[in-house]
Image (cartoon, each protein chain N blue to C red):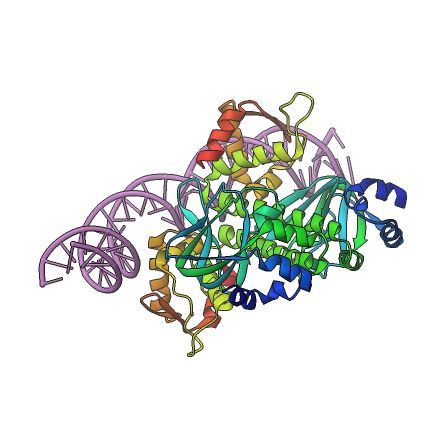
Amino acid sequence: MKDVIVSHISSIWNLLSADEQNYLYDQLSYHTYRKNELIYSEGMQPENMMCLLSGQVKIYKVGPNTRFQIMRVIRPVQYFGYRAYFAHEPYVTNACAFENAKIALIPMKCIDHIIETNCRLAAFFIHQLATDLGISDQRSITLTQSHIRGRLAETILFLKKTYGVEADGATLSIYLSREDLAALANMTTANAIRTLSSFTSENLVVTDGRKIKIIDETALQRIARLG
Amino acid sequence: MKDVIVSHISSIWNLLSADEQNYLYDQLSYHTYRKNELIYSEGMQPENMMCLLSGQVKIYKVGPNTRFQIMRVIRPVQYFGYRAYFAHEPYVTNACAFENAKIALIPMKCIDHIIETNCRLAAFFIHQLATDLGISDQRSITLTQSHIRGRLAETILFLKKTYGVEADGATLSIYLSREDLAALANMTTANAIRTLSSFTSENLVVTDGRKIKIIDETALQRIARLG
DNA sequence: CTTCTTGTATGTTGTATATCATAAAAAGTA
DNA sequence: TACTTTTTATGATATACAACATACAAGAAG
């Protein structure tokens, strides 16, 4: 089992010395989460960093009016759950599997210890955090300044860029409920449905259940850019 | 001059070995910016990391409708301008001095080089980036989910926490224009003025020009919490 | 001292979008 | 099968806020 994990987490594993690999090997563990199962929640102390091996995970926050907003979606093979530990804080977000998920757990204490002497691993996290911070700042602007159509268009394009498309080159390979799509684009479910069906009648996309196929990407880009 | 800089940037200077200090000492430079002068702008390649020695700097982004939003305000002595370099991106924000500012410039190439072997410095940046990412995520929620009164109340409390108060224990020690206050709280200038004067007539704050004195902090917290 | 500019203040109107309501379709469940 | 629950869909209403307009105060510049 552990060897399977190791084969998946190569992007950090390869940064380690043989000694460090041995040290970490003993500490690795593994957990499966069922659909809609909570992985961690706001206020908890972060102990492990996680690597999603398969399935889908969403990281979200709950606002004052109980509406929830998806901050990022984790796809295999990505790491998550380390930010709070590095900031010496409890978690400020919630993580939930929205498809059955297999997750490798890596104790942050070990990571912290290795980082004391392994600068390449440190550089990995610096790069990761710096990239995520840029994305988060960009999202702040998009979510607050763009109008509904712009936000939904941008979200659809974002999903294409992040998750890619199926063999036809146009259908998003991630299937989200309308509610999650709304939580990602910061709008109510009703408006996500409404706006998506506008896009359909304007021949920008075609939907089939939760499948979204992009028809006119240029037009979507224009809508996203103008807000 | 350089020795003055060194005395100010102790939080990273102290993490360096004697050799590293000597190496960096030669590369340090220094620049003063006048009020409203641009320090860097979106699209530029990041070459230096900066340390604000005195004055005030705002980091902001411009949205699709040309409205600008302040992402963070830098106070002495804080570092900024390193995120984009670490993410291998051009700047995605603009930085502008809104009070005459003295700024130390530290070439990122040098930092990058030192980080290859100095894990303590790497850990400094990891901590910094992780903290900023948490703040950015929290702001996303506040700015999108709270209503005007909640956003302004939260912004005032945020300014108190970040910049502190004067001798009376209640007057914010940062003086922002109404326009900047609005850009920070993500609203139009007119609404910032309007809402602030509501707060005044409700005896939550007292204003005198750009001075804001907090009268009823508990009430402000309640408004911020409920959105 | 005027004149011009910039920041502050407040009222009015229009519109984007949340909220509420209802219903059909789809997906589980017995 | 029938029955419940969830998801999707669409219309009507309410409201928060942006946009616009106007006025005044305070500096800055002539």
